[in-house]
Length: 178
Image 1 (cartoon, rainbow, N blue to C red):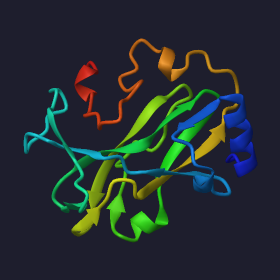
Image 2: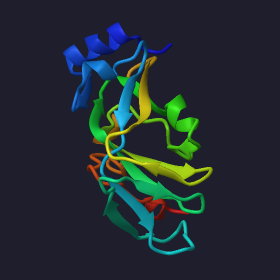
Image 3: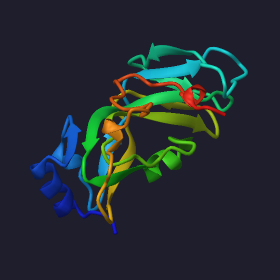
Image 4: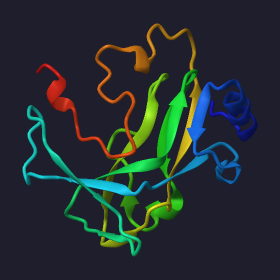
C-alpha cells in the first residue's frame, strides 16, 4: 500500500514526514517530486575498489547546465532534505527523466524508517544529456510499515548515510567487514 496525497499531507502535519523545502505543487496523487541539487560528484580514480575509500570530486552545475556522458557514474543530490519517521520512503525516477535516458539510482531507491538527509543519486545516462539545477529528477513514495520498528535508521550506531548533506556522498562500502 502506498500513501495517497491526503495521507502524505496528514503525515507532514504530524511531522512523521518532513520535506524541506516544501512546495504543495510538487505533491502528486501518491508521490512527491524532488529536484536535482546544485552539486554533482564523480569518482577520482577510474577503477573503484569495494574495500577502499574511493574519493570523489565535487563540482557545481553551472547555470547553462552540465552535460552528462554515458561512460561516467555521477553522484548527484536532491535539493530536498527529508525525514521519514514512520514510513519506508522509496525514491524513483520520473518518467520524464527516464525518457531522456537518465537513471537516478543503481540500486539504492529504498530508504529506511528514520532516514534523515538529502538523497544521494547514482546517476547514469544512456546517451549525452544536459541537466540543470532544480530540474525535477525523481519522486518519493511512502509505504506504511507493518509492526514496530526496534531501531530507526537515524538511531543506528552503524548508519553510514544518516544525516546526508546537500552534497553527494560516496560509497561507504569500505566500512563493511568482508
